[in-house]
Amino acid sequence: MRTSFVYINTSINEGMCLAMLEAMTLGIPVLARRNTGNTSIIKHRKTGFIFDTPDEAAQCLVELDSCNELRHELIQQAE
Image (cartoon, rainbow, N blue to C red):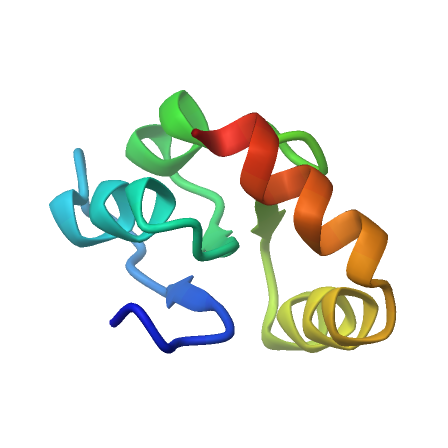
């Protein structure tokens, strides 16, 4: 997981995702589908990205890939 560019959580119903917390601890930016568990951990565009649709997830990935400054900011805020 340490060498991952991003962690994506697509779960619709998952509560407290330990793998997502691990990714954040390792300094890996997180993209997570909007659900109660994910939104209690991730603050959109502050500690990661929250998305509702696959198209929104793709837009987040493009933005993350094209902006290193944003990527580093998300990593710092998530630690």
